[in-house]
Length: 177
Image (cartoon, rainbow, N blue to C red):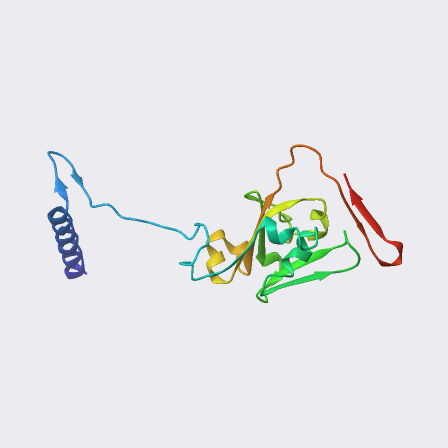
C-alpha cells in the first residue's frame, strides 16, 4: 500500500512539472494553453455528417399546413394519427418511440412532462416558417428525450392578418383567420 501511495505522489508531481513546462509562468500563477470545445449546434451545411433535414418556407407552402403532415416528407420519420385532424398524432424517428423524439418550438420544449411525447394533433393551428429534423445519434446532445431525434419548429412571424382556407371531398371545409 505504501508503494502505491508513493507512486501516486510521484505521478502528480510529474504531471505538475509537465504542465508548468508547457504553460506561461507568472509570479504566482500560470496560464494554460487554450482548449477549444465545440458542440453540434451549428447551422446544417455540407460539412455536417449527421442526418439533418431542413424544410424551408418555400417547401412548406407546397405541403399541408399541418406540421405532422409536413414531417412525412422527411426520410426516417413515421407519423401515426389515431383519427382525423386534431386527434392524437405521434411522430417517431428512426424506429424510436414517440417519447424519444424531442420537439422544440422556437427553442422551447413542448413535450408532455409526464409521458415525454408530443401530441402533434394539438399543433394544427401553428404556422411554421422552418422545420429542422435531426435524426440519429447526433441528437443525443439534447438529452435522453432525444434518442430518436429532434424536431425544431420555427414559428411564422404573426404580426398582421392572415387567412387560409381548404376544401376537400365529401363537402369538407377548413378555414382559419
